[in-house]
Image 1 (cartoon, rainbow over the protein chains, first blue to last red):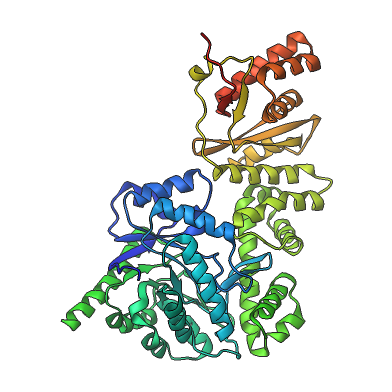
Image 2: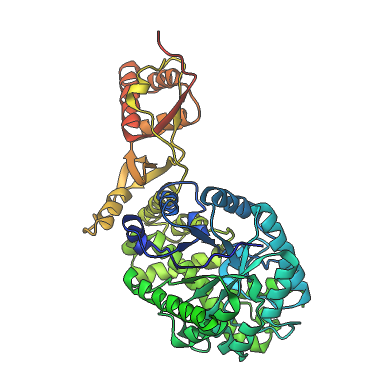
Length: 276
Length: 254
């Protein structure tokens, strides 16, 4: 079981590299996109090492493709293992999705049908990844835009079963729950009540945008009130978790993100007071 | 539908906008498929635009969008890293701009600079270490980020001007085919246009030819006086550039 870590962090993005390296930013950890640093050398790798010397780091991947029916990419796993050995991250995570099939890589987080066959596939892949990485990983619920009719179970039931079979932890993206609930018409609160709380080790908070037909997970907006409401709802069930804010586009000054993180700290403090 | 069949249909929709594959995924999937089609193409276009900023500036934004769209159709991404996706783009530029060779050469420069930026780390050998080397038996080891290509135009001058937001010179063909080398020293990528003599010497040296043998080859090719003088001068330049990171077959002078 992955140890719990209670803290508040931000995604480390290029516009803020200098802030994180020249001052002590008031975060408990930072999260980086693993693939940006799975390179042979040069400045990106050096920056990550310098950041790691100052802050705990979580590695968050977008290309493991845990749902690929033809299995995982061994070369990818080997590179990630080398980064894990060097950085000794707080968490290693990726998404409940797939990107690659038979030599084609979409570089998008594509949806899975929540069937028993898909569960077998993802469980096999997670088990292999954890074996190569030498540690348990966190699997994140994605924002989805397609709801496959052939599903045998809900997404939270799928994650529950996956976690039980592989021992993996969960990264609960509250914004993704909101986006998927809006797109597919399910109850986001029912989802949060159904997630296996004892498996959640990290929370993502982010913003989204209204697309032409669907709500889109854009990470280019502040966390909206609807997502804060879901965060406040689920937090009492979870106990000690790491919370972080993702911002990947229209990135504001660091001070703005720290102000958003203060909102998360405030909600968490209220939860503790209410429980006392 | 099996998971594999579903994923093959999604691939067919993304890579070729295959309507029959989309139909098999269900009518309700159509809005979501459009989102993923947009994600797929916009992500790749953004990757190419970010990696080939000067090439885009040179041919214009609209033309670049058309070239990127054609490249995405011709070369679907295969690697887990988008860094790999840019490698084939200069070939697409060459195919689409056969009468304007500076376009593909600009693309090669940008691609090579990006690759060098995240290439393996290596520490250049200091000049004083090399002063103790027995050059009769030495094989030079070059930095792993060194890359080399033929050059037929003034693309380096165009790239430099565009990178500094200056007015670029008009494209010109070189009088004779030269070459360009790209490498990283410390954390910065560099490039330098070189003449055919240096290109040939670098190819020999990188292939493992001992330096003494390289001098002999230079003498054979360009005569005793010029061959020896150029070999010595090139060695000095390579050391100054930080290209040499190892020497093998070293025998310390007594």
